[in-house]
Image (cartoon, rainbow, N blue to C red):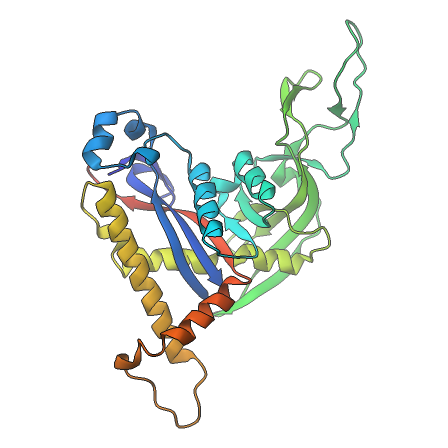
Length: 335
């Protein structure tokens, strides 16, 4: 179901696999999976008979990109009453200008990964009238400077060592730098002799991360201009708990063990793993939560009686949570 040759993030290359779009709500070190939706590549959406055999509902048979599915899932959970502080996503979504613009249009804060070659302008870029050496006068403004790749934009930035949390082996830290930019995701326009170039879009943060391993990562965030670098770094790195949840779903709860061929079967299997994960999170929080002196740990039989307290915990968690989007690649050898 949905198996095709596509990029698998877990392998770092193209492979025969399924891809699920996941939406996870997290606060601190407490993640809760809210959605797992199968992505159907063009090799599936272009074959009506194949979709019918797999039982794909009519509303999901139209080709949609992963960012489009992600925005639809965000709209669905917002309509259900879920509230959160910031949307986090990997570079597979951050590369998409319509995705970033869709989040902004919904008045959401976001921080997303991007590839190092994504182009941007300095925040103080000016729109000017180009001087025509010959021919008719120009009728459209153009930027007074050309856009450059994100990695070049941060080449002369000031980098700082920042620690965002303490792990099992000590403090986790890396070097970060951030500058205000305007992303080159506006309408395309011919600029000088450079052909079609995208005009400056909204002003955002461009953040760079140099890890201790030598790996370099880049991000965009529409957080306020006065946001401190430490806050930007902590916001970006908050996605780690969601990635850990994905790994546990696949390795410990059997998400990637589904062998069926139907849309309904896959999503029922995904739902059961989500319910199991939420239950285990509840048990973990109950076991590690504050207890009165000499109070015994409650038995399993008291689980139903303690449910209202858990509901209060969930409501307070959603108040300042961060949903994170990611692709979950499940390897398959047959379609």
